[in-house]
Structures are given as structure tokens and as C-alpha cells.
Image (cartoon, rainbow, N blue to C red; front, top):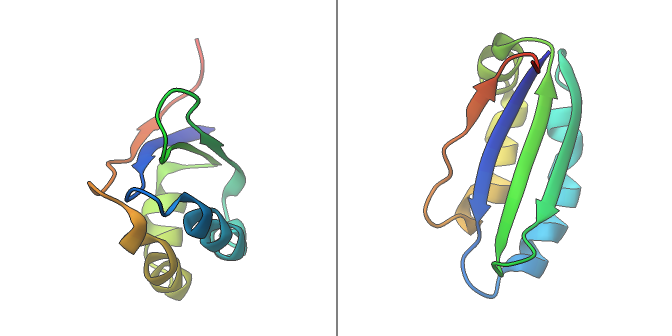
Length: 96
């Protein structure tokens, strides 16, 4: 199983709108073959910062299956305008 991680820095004061948009966009990623589960956690120390964790069966399930789908265009339109700076996602392998 692959774990994707990204720090989502939201433009100041837009966290409530981001949370609502994320709730609506969630089904888009969840419908992807190879998607396992997702967590979005608000940072305790830093306002307007979130940790995104997504478990995938393979890296390609994310990079090809989701990002190559029409659902990704909808996800991008719903969420990407909230980020500053734009997040960098990374993938991790099995736990030790």
C-alpha cells in the first residue's frame, strides 16, 4: 500500500470554505480504483494548515488513475484556488 502525503496551506481566512469544498470534492477521489482511504487533519499549531493523507493501492492509482481522470479536473476546480503556496505531494511505501 502507498501513502500519499501533502501539507495544504490555505489562504488566510478561507479554512471554513476549504473544509466545505473538501467535503463536496471527497467523492471524486474516493471513486478512483485503487483508492483505499483518506484523512484530512487541521494543524493544531498553525491556523489554515492541513495534513492530507491518502492511501492508494499503487502510485499509478493516484498519478494515472486519479490525475488522469475527468474527476481530477473537478477536484482541481473545487480545491486548488485555496492553496498558497501550492502543495507538493509525496508517496511513501510500506511501513518498516
